[in-house]
Image (spheres, rainbow, N blue to C red):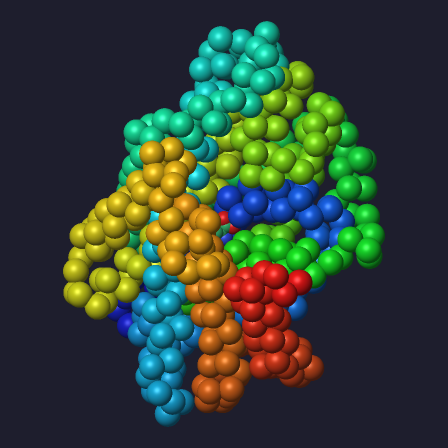
Length: 471
Ligand code: PHE
């Protein structure tokens, strides 16, 4: 059922709220809960956080609007939506490359994202067995040596078959929702799980605020020390803003394709990016008080969530219960994002090869399992395999990091730059204006950002991504 029936017979979101929740579900994920606190911790806290917010407002939000409007105008899969807008603007249909690149990136990200999703499932299991042993009120892992708790992650990494099995499990759950369709699966999931997610996040933040070092975390996350704002920190913030808002992978073009004409895209994009940023900040305010209360460092990077935090839960009252709730919350966030990642190539295959949704999504998921297995094994059996070793940028990167690096450093920014050029310069501006829901000064400001500020800033990340020694 489409909102206005304008989706040309295609299935669409059943309400604006459903679209907003699904888009927030896509944006809010491991990027907010796992990557954002880790990046903030590694890049000195406040300077990173404040620059991140600036990037969301000035670059993320305008690109988000550009992507959703292409989708809504085309009412199709992402590449077809671009082709339609290009045709009506009398531009080359080859602009669809921006969306095809996005579809490819979504597939590649899906492949490694589900591997990390598998780790989250594993920790749900670990905390569950701990809860059974210690009971609801106990701290996590009572009587166990902290080194033993931190060794759980390397222990998992050393077990190739378990990693592949967990990847398969996470992909299977993702597939279950996508195969059921837009309103019957993806939407049902978003509408039920996103509110539950917010409830858990706020609950755990309050728990951290009472039991942990809340003021220290506030100071850490929001004290702006200008000398810490270096080039690499700014680029890390920009890249993070992009990943977190799910931009440059045709995801928001795809989700926009299921939106009816009565939805104001500018307002909706503002809600989506506001919610995504709020979750990232809350994730910081939820995690750091607990970590600081245990006297642990903020800069453990990727290990912050999987090693530092479980260790910190040991000394918190009820840590065992809160631990399992925390990892359930992360699983929910990761699933609503992996569903978006699977939907992007699925909708393209349905249209291109006239396959059913069940078959298309199964084929994409199987492909992602194949690549994901290699990514999972790159922590153990294939640790020395360098798939793009002949390219200097990826000379030292294993399979997992290559998937991440190729998409984050190359494909996503390139697709986003092309999106800005297409929407800002190439497409018929009357069509664009009829879709964006903006007027007056705000409209002029958005156009300026899409034409100049966004592509130039994005070009900067891409260049520094390719030539890291420039800074
Ligand atoms: N934005 C998601 C996150 O923060 C990741 C994602 C990227 C999802 C691209 C969909 C598309 O985890």
